[in-house]
Amino acid sequence: MNLKDLYIDFFVSKGHRQIPSAPVVPENDPSVLFNTAGMQPLIPYLMGEIHPYGTRLVDYQKCIRTNDLDSIGDTTHHTFFEMLGNWSLGDYFKDESIEFSFEFLTKILNIPVSRFAVTVFAGNEKIPFDEVSYNKWLSLGISESRIIKTVEDNFWIAGETGPCGGDTEIFYFRSEDMIPEVFDSEDDRWVEIWNNVFMEYYKDSEGNVSKLSKKNVDTGMGVERVTAILEGVNDNYLSSVWIDVINKICDISGLSYEDNLKSMRIIADHIRTSVFISADKSGIKPSNTDQGYILRRLIRRMIRHIKILGIDINSDWERELALLIIDKYKDYYNELEENKQIVLDVLKNEKVKFNKTLEKGLREFEKSVINGNSVSGEVAFHLYDTYGFPIELTVELANERGLGVDENGFYEMFKKHQELSRTASAGKFKGGLQSDGIMETKYHTATHLLNAALKVVVGEEVHQKGSNITSERMRFDFSCDHKLTEEEKTKAEELVNKWINEGLIVSKTQMSKEEAINSGAECMFIDKYPDIVSVYCIGDVSKELCGGPHVSNTNELGHFHIVKEESSSAGVRRIKAVLSDE
Picture (tube, rainbow, N blue to C red):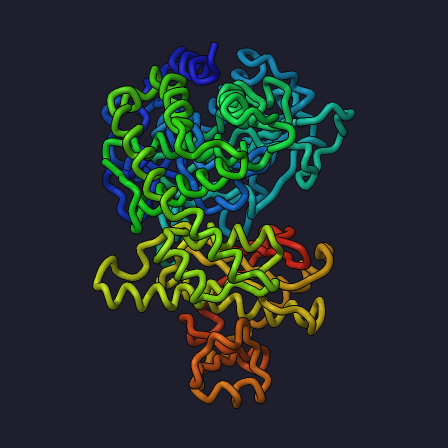
C-alpha cells in the first residue's frame, strides 16, 4: 500500500478526520507565492479558529519551495514535495502525539527502534526543558545516548509573534554502517524524518511568552524522503516516487541515468512541479511576475537540460512526461485529470516560445564569455529581455564555467526597465529576483559585514563573486581556494555578530569612481559602475561601492547565523546565512 494511504488509514483509526490537500497557490495568504509546508493552510485554526472537521485532523499536502532551487540535481532536494501531517487542535498533546508517531513508524512501517534517535527542546530563560517528551521517548525504548537536547533546532514559531513551542524531531540512521550508540546530529547518516511541534506558548510583540489556554500539535513527514528510506535507496530518484519518471527520460533520450544524473534529476523534478502549478485552480500561466515567473523559470531550465541530453526539443517529450505525472497522481489530486489539457497546453506553448530563442541566446552567452570574462549586468539583462533567459539560468550557465555574474547590475537594469514600462511593481519576484523589503534590506547590509569578516578570517584576497537575497535568507559567493574549517566559519559568524552588537552606523557618500577606488572601497565589477558612485561605510569595518538598500545601523539586523558553506564553482565558495531576532 502507498505510504500516503498507510498514513491516512492509521490516523483515521486514531480518531482523526482526513482533510483535503489545499491548492499549491494559497487561497487567502498573499504573503507567499506557494504553500511551503503542510501546516501553512491550517494557520488560522492553529491560531484559534474552529475547524469544521473537528480537533483531530490528518492529510497529505502539496508543497512547493523554490528557495533552494539551485540545489535541485542532488539526491534529496525537490521543488514540489508531499507532506504528511496530523494535528491536534486543543485535543491530545505531547504524550499521545509521540505515541502515535512511534507506533506508526515501528508497527505500521516496521522500522526497528535501533535505527531511531530524537531531539527535544532543551529549554531557555523563558521556556523550560521539555521533560515530558524526553521521558516519553525513554519509556518507548530510545536510549539516553540517542536523545539530544537543543534550543535553536527544537523551537518553532510561525512568524515574529504568535503560537510557539518546542518540538521533537525523529531521526533515522540511513546507512549500512554499524549504528553508533551515541547520536550525533552533525553525522549526515542520521536523517530527520518526522517533526512534532508542540504549541503551548504565545509570544507577543514585546517578546513576552505566556502559556496558551488551548495547546496544539502540528506534525510533518516528507513522503519522498521516507519512501526512499523504506525502499533502502540513498538517492530519492531511485525510489518508487521517481523511478518511472527517470526511466521515461532514459527511454526518450536513449541515455543512462548513471551518466546523466544532474540533468535527469532536474528534468524529473521540474516537470512534476510544472504540472502541479499548471493544474492548480488559480490558473497560473508562465509570465514574468509572481508564481508565473517561477513556472516559466522551471520550464525553461528544464528545456535547457532536455537539450543537454540531446532530446529533440520539437518532439512530444513534455507531453509524455506530463501524462505520466498526471496518471501517477490523479487518484490523489483530481485537478490533474480535470485540467490535463490546460497543463499540456501550458507546457507546449512555453516550449515553443522559448525554443525560438534558446539557440540564439546560448550563442550570445558563449560570445560574452569567450575570453573567460564574468557576465556583466548588461549581458545578463540582454539575455533576459531578448532571449527570455531567467537570471538564474544565466547564473547556472556561468557557474558551470567557473564564472561570476553581475547580478546587482542585472537587477539595476531590471528596475529601470520596470520603471520605463510601468509594469509589475518592484519586489514582486520572490525566490529569485530580489525586492527592497525590510528583510531584503537587512540581508543586503549583512553581505557587507560577511565580506569584511571573511577578509579578516580567511585573508584580504577574499572578494565577493555574487549574491542572492530573499526575505528568508542570504546567499553569498566569494573567492576562496578551500572549504572553510569549522573554526573559520565560527570566527566569521562571531565577528559579524560582534559588529552587529556594536551598533555601527551605516553611512553613504557619493563620489567619483576614481576617488572611491583610491579610498580603498571594495567593489565587484568596477567597470559596470557609473562615473559617480555611492560608497557605503559600516563603521570602520567595511567600505564598498554599492547600489542596493541598506539599514542605517547594524543593530537593526538581529542575530547572524551561517547555515551552510559549500562549493559554488571552481575557486568560489558559497555561504547561506539567516538573520533572526535571537
